[in-house]
Image 1 (cartoon, helix red, strand yellow):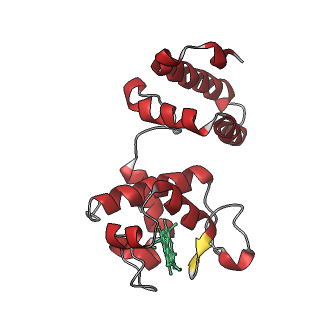
Image 2: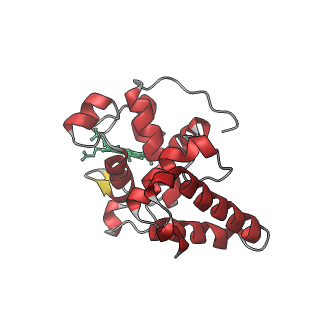
Length: 177
Ligand code: HEC
C-alpha cells in the first residue's frame, strides 16, 4: 500500500492524503448508496492502525475535512443524541438511578470511566443497571430495549460526555427536538 512509503516526518500531509481519499470515496459513492458508504467508512477506520487514526483525528482541525470521521466535536449533535438516548437517567450529567455514578468528572474518575474509550465502552455494552446501546451489544439482557446507536454516534456521545464533564456540564441549548 502506498501509505507505508511516506516518511514519518510528513504525517500531516499523509493524513491530508487519507482525508482527501476519504472525501473522494464519499463523493464517489454518495449518490449511489449512502448506507454502503457509512459501512465502508467504518471498515476503512478499522483497517487503519489505531495510532494512525489518532494522528488523523489530532491533525484534522488543520486540514478541516468536510467528513464526519475525525472532525472536531459537534456539540449540537452530541447534545441532541444525549437528549434522545441518555437524558432519561443522566439529566444535566446526573444519575437518577445510581447517585454515585454521575457523569461529573469526580465520579467518572473514581469509577475509572474518565476517558473517551471507557465512556464509549460503558455506552456500547452497558454496566450494572446501565443498558448498552451498541448495535452488537451482548448479552441481550444488558442492552437497551430501545433503538441501538451507530458506532459513530456512540463515539460522538463519548466525546460529548467527556467534554461536558471537563467543563462541569454547562447547559446547552438544542434546537428542533
Ligand atoms: C436506564 C437508565 C440509563 C440510561 C438511559 C443511560 N444510563 Fe448511563 N448509567 C446508568 C446507570 C445505572 C449507571 C451506573 C452503572 C454502574 O456503575 O453500575 C450509568 C453509568 C454511566 C456512565 C459511567 C458513570 C460513572 O460515573 O461511573 C457513563 C459514562 C454513562 N452511564 C453514559 C451514558 C450515556 C452516554 C447514555 C446514553 C447513550 C446513558 N448512559 C444512558 C443508567 C443509564
